[in-house]
Image (cartoon, rainbow, N blue to C red; front, top):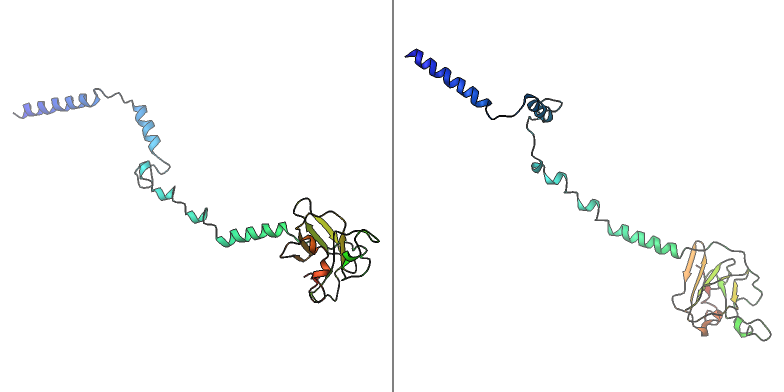
Length: 209
């Protein structure tokens, strides 16, 4: 009886061994290559001995970049940048060599400068350092921007006078500049206001700052 059981066991063992090899085309080299592909420097495949599934990588390690690091630029930074751009377009003008301001500072230049006995000015006035009109400002630049055409730049004389005979399309914007100061008249100048000292009389002089 024992001999028969031993014989059956041997036959089963031989059959299983043959069955394991049957239909299996895997070569030893292929098995070794697969093992090498999985193994890393620590010989486990990964630190914990498990090869991770790509889909199991947490999304926040790749996609969840904080939006504020890219898009949420503080509003004050944007405003400061815009202000800087505005200042760059109206930067003050450095002192210039004063012109010959001639005479009669503070008076209505256009009452005489009509083209008869004196040259015809299309805009003229006097620049002071305050509305009181006690001290003239020399070497400043008066920038006249007509409603059409190119801007006109006038340099004030040693007595503060400025004037031009250039054609001006009114209304025009007038600005006085001498670094670090720069001011633009809040209202556009009409042709009737070309004689600046008529409106800007004593106590209300054209001034900078």
